[in-house]
Image (cartoon, rainbow, N blue to C red; front, side, top):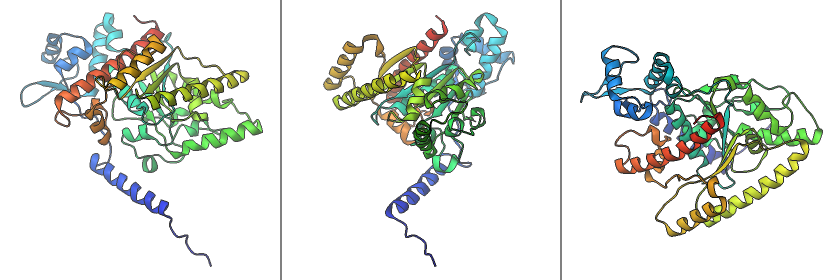
Length: 396
């Protein structure tokens, strides 16, 4: 006769925390425990976003053309993000000369851009940057796909999904890049609560790719997707027609999954906190990456990024030691360091606690001036990244 195993402390901790996280999600996103994008856009927001006169928006409303805004108690007209996308489509059709500005999807001759955010050290804000870039691009009107490559699945959580409850077996990118029988990537892509923004979520299942790749390399088994560094790029190509930009959130390591992401990327962004320990850790990351890519080059692998850029994150401009580190990075890497930096902000921290980005915060959730400064910083960073995408497409 067998007896049930006595739960270990790890079992107890896991069960208690998982239940609490599930309960917390239910409180954050009632009643269906699903996240939504509730931010509304005023006509002033649309003037800045679409670069059209306020009089044009007023005329469209009076003539009953295009999506019709709601009115607040104070009489101000407001649009949902879905209506902003509908307005882009309407203006692109009615004003062919401005179609590219209104509906900025990539054209057939423009290559899909794959942006990987990474670093060796946790806390470099790579996931924070990934989610903010994704939300920024969706607001700007681009068809964007996020792929969570990190078994910790922080990006997945920020999209309102709890990895251990909402992401089942064969629902991560592992199922599309696994060896032998694999699923089409399009079958595991999920639409999010923002128009134009989709996600392939992650969870601990992604660890299986590390084990499977080691076995495949030792056994020399091959299938139609090829070696590990080819697999992600090939499955992304299968859905390329549906997207303009893909964002890869990589684990804080240089495992097979991370390398697959870097070899698929056209733009590689290295996030770094301006502290000496973080910079030293990044140096080790770069040394390991150089050595691994040199070795993989013997098997035909080559990094094909159009650009590699360093992004300073959690930056406090008036901190003297940080200023020294930022100056050092700019001296060493020159134009490869983004001009804009992602500022350290209580607004970013508050948004993270609520599993939101700055773009999702409503007025009153954080102090107005703090949110304004944080958004200006994040907008500037994301605008620089988008400028690289436009350069790759040959747009001025």
